[in-house]
Structure formats: structure tokens, C-alpha cells
Length: 114
Image (cartoon, rainbow, N blue to C red; front, top):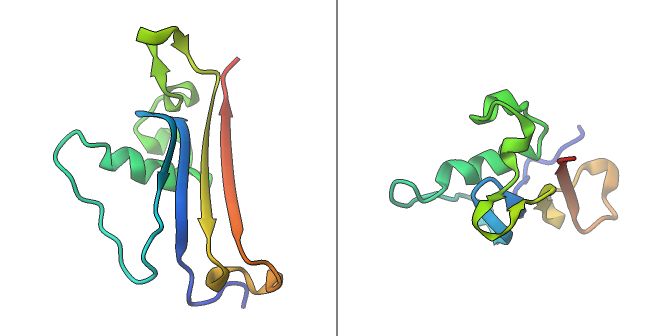
């Protein structure tokens, strides 16, 4: 068995991803249940897309037509950013059994626009 049954996320950190300007940290998450609530247009979908994006989901499945659309567009303050990052951390109770000595595992996915 490669993965424990206790898998849960520690936190999610984005940098210039979609509508999230700069560094935004979500979490810590509760190990049993989490809810994403808020009014319309409060970026609930973008949070979920950042989460899914870390696992390598194709851009076409993320309501975007191209990869560059996932980078925050700050037209009013000087143009586009050249990169975006999403980092997902798992706590020590959820690490893969192959890596028992580690306290934390992180998955990072970056986008670069040239």
C-alpha cells in the first residue's frame, strides 16, 4: 500500500494564480471535513481549480483555454506577471508510506509565460 488512509491536506498556497494576487495562503485545513462557502463571485471555483491544478489536471478542464490564463493579470498596475505558482502541503499523518521519515510532503506546480 502506497498511501495511508489518513490523507489530509495541510494548506494550499497560491502566488498570482487566476484571481489571487500575490501570495495567498489557504488553511490550515481540518483533517475530517472542510467547506468552501461564500457569496457569488468570491473565488470559490478558483480555489478549487488551484487545488486540482496541483495534481496536473489539464488546463482545458479548468475553465481556461490556455495556460497563460491561469496567471494573474494585473493590467491596471503594469501588465502581466510572468509566472504563477500553486503549492499544496500534506501533513505528517498523510505522507506516503515509502517516505515515513518525512514530516511533510509538498506538491508544487508552476506556470511560466514568456
